[in-house]
Length: 558
Image: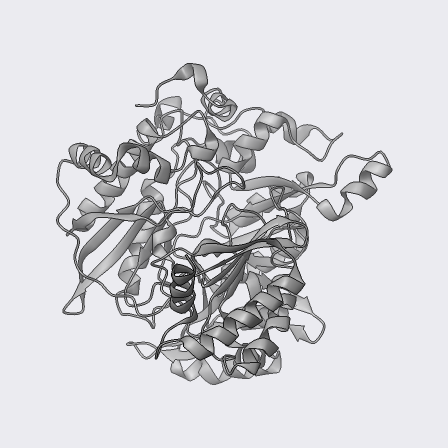
């Protein structure tokens, strides 16, 4: 076990000395002389689902005027499986208008973020969410994050079962401290310290964040293998008979640090009951809690613990704690990893419309009032809202008799036209938030990738590839939030306007890509892709994807 208390990182000391994640947050919030909170509290606030940020576009201006940076906060909801009622969407819309920039952001982990919230608006925002039966507990921090699962019930009658499992795992992995309610909801709350004892997290919590995803084949729309814990439903005779459980996925790395790397999860084995799934997940977490690296946060994710111990030793420790052994993994097959846009009907006769939301940004812009249109749809009360791991939105559970009304609103606000008109490359693009709010960003992502795609599309058209489902993803730094390491084409920011270009990932999320060119700008990006697409159309095998071709191309180069 990693019990070297002399070499603990500063974050570890902050956690254990935090009085159940309370720290001095109340004092920080009461300080009206700064938009920031105290340094230690900036760690603790993550466990409450928030990050302190600043507007990086205005840093120089503020410094020149001898003003502090323009601090604000991002709040992320905990929505296991990514579901909101229409009433909750209306409430979310009002909260976004009253307290944030107004933009509703769909994340790559199937939930919602609001940005630009001033310190004085934090408690009102959380209290507004609470009235809507929503919370941001454990949406960030060194705990289990939002649990994702296959999004669209039209994919399989079994989606509901996976969605319910996501909720059970989320509930099981919640921290026991009541600090969230103490600080944000009720100042006078009296806490029973005995009730806050936490056998899962203790007072240390985890060495780093932990992510869990559930996939229902044949669609790997959750990118299941990028998770610390990956559950793949095994289906026989149209029933889920259990799950293959994998562990050790994670895409983050650090430029120039070869000890850090992206990794896909390794399959531990199969379990045949929900009870065993929950127990196995719990004990995978406890092993990471006890053996994970608490000295170097760059090496503290579960993937590094598994690679240090070895997969066999990690599995054996989990089995010892769980009280049962994994069975051999069972066969499964993914055939796609994308959202199915437009109208689809499920086995119950209900309709679902998947809206293309470019990089998850829901707002009104000139000529395209997406946010207003979705609000009007929500106010009908006839549509649930489901989010996908590809940053899109599903208008869900629509009765046959209500379909025409929803369809009319989609056309009225240009939503169906925008969704239908986007190219395959654009629909298969993902980008992280990056600049101007992310403190780690080295380059643009969500603000830049749309214009880059616009410049790539004519190149694809030249080669007859415009309708190819090529996945393209961009991150503003190497931490992997936009999942660029397992795209067919991945961009990783190195400096403003510069990116590493990665190619060779497969289309189904089963293979990572490889760095092809370093630190290149837009002109070289476009020239390089033009050359690669030209070679691809000349030398690809029948039905060969660009990812598989470029992987083969790289192998031949080497």
